[in-house]
Length: 98
Length: 205
Image 1 (cartoon, each protein chain N blue to C red):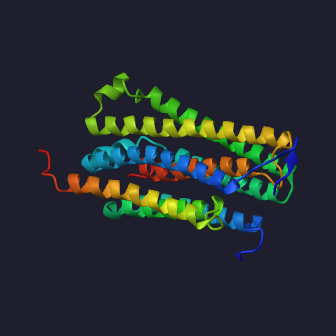
Image 2 (image 1 turned 45 degrees about the horizontal axis):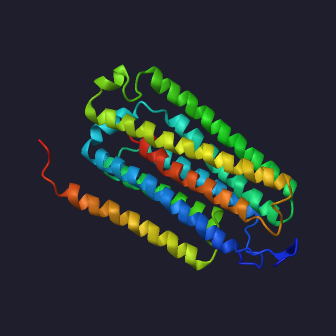
Image 3 (image 1 turned 90 degrees about the vertical axis):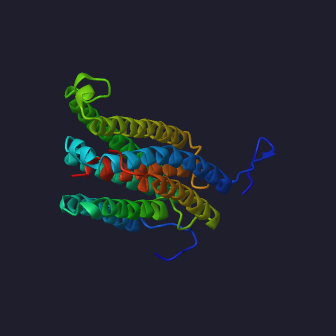
């Protein structure tokens, strides 16, 4: 979509974004029935993150809003990821509880 | 764009208003983020029990509610592009449709929760107390996180109702629609949280 003066996304584009979100939803349902237990969580989270990105970038208008908002979103995401990773450094290296 | 009303210049900063909304959304993200962290750790420690317990949830209900929320996000986005094009009537209609989707979501949730409660799976109920610890944790987190999310659906619906009222009064116009945009941001955030809740609770086999 070209960046025109009104900084807006056409209704047609919105509808194709909606279709892509539906396709990703059905993909993640389908993927969950494939038995790759090790990958299952990863695949589910990857698809969910792709959907969240699409919602944020187009529906929440991060594509057109000022860069500062995008940077703030990124920083919040990094803070959250840091919490998850650091917590797993703890649990991942503990002796299993017998 | 300063218009004069009763002699005073109106100062508006739409971007600051949006940044304020985003700051609030970050606190919401971290609220749910903390819960996701709890979920992740307990799932890591009880993976078999979580998979077992998740079998009780209906993938169909979860999928239908995902589609409902994604579609409601579309109608909110379309209503904002309608007001930008000075189509207040269309914007209002699209927001009413959003509220209808919110209602469908809550009705689904009601039937889903009722079935679980009927089976005694609500924390503190008789059957719940006999579950293995890992499965009890799953249902505790399920009720807490989907319940908190449902509260957000209610809050978002109230926000959208306020926007509809302001549209009726002509207070939201083609030149001043930041309130509607902020309501939209909130609604999309609630959608994003569900996008994560759905695979984490419904799609473990």
